[in-house]
Length: 214
Ligand SMILES: C[S@@+](CC[C@H](N)C(=O)[O-])C[C@H]1O[C@@H](n2cnc3c(N)ncnc32)[C@H](O)[C@@H]1O
Image (cartoon, rainbow, N blue to C red; front, side, top):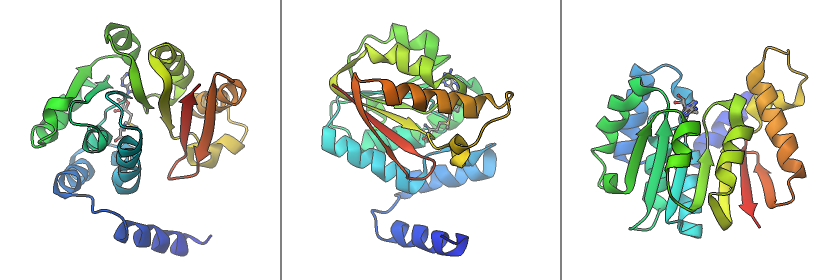
């Protein structure tokens, strides 16, 4: 599809789904003005998809690996049940003030537990059986995140992995220094063979894989 039509369709979608909402809109704007790589945040469409998945499966214990601005965290919180706990982990402590500034404006802030540090060190310390895990941190380490959370996800729980089409680069033979593309390709190949789960890749945005634990 030509770029122009793709953009027009995207705008059409955004004008025919629920509104982004004031808090998410102002967070999004703040990120575009003040942060590096604002495109990393989930954004309006993916945010509403995450919220809808929470509405459908009603998770109580949620884990997000890779907070960045807290955009997706707030979307997960919006869709989750009232007594849900959303644990979100961010390694970059310079983002803490930005994240807290926006989380504090949300009436859902009491559901959200922000952990600053490396997910690989923090996850073993969170004592929960998760109903939903959103993997969205360093693309080089998706397999490690998957392995470390797997036993902490309940049977019938959902794991969502973002960026699994990696701007179409999954189709290419990457240069050996392109560890992010290699990381995503290895994750997708591993997952395709993992019969402990059912999985489907949604070709939304940068690719969103839904993984259901049998
Ligand atoms: C794509 S952004 C997350 C976007 C966010 N989930 C959203 O949808 O709005 C990835 C984030 O993961 C963080 N990150 C990378 N490695 C990490 C690790 N080992 N532990 C925790 N966070 C990590 C990065 O600093 C970055 O802020």
